[in-house]
Length: 116
Image (cartoon, rainbow, N blue to C red; front, top):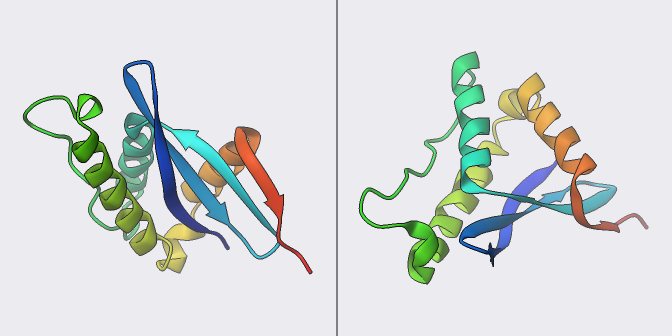
């Protein structure tokens, strides 16, 4: 089982990429995602009717990517989303979440071994 958090973000041209940290018993790795990719994960979970927290909404006024405080706020909200998601064992065990973790492992940004 992994805990998932948003450890940071960076600007890639006009887009924001969030650094997602996957922390397991044996390994910890980072992968990067845009907001839209994380929203797609939430949409897929919603179609399966699994229990999940509410996903942070898009900004109605102005572009989030062009405002540092909005990006930081979104990071905090995404982090809370994953914090709540990770305690729902049935959701974390579902195929969609397991596939999300497998895909993240294929697109590792940074990795480290945390064994003894």
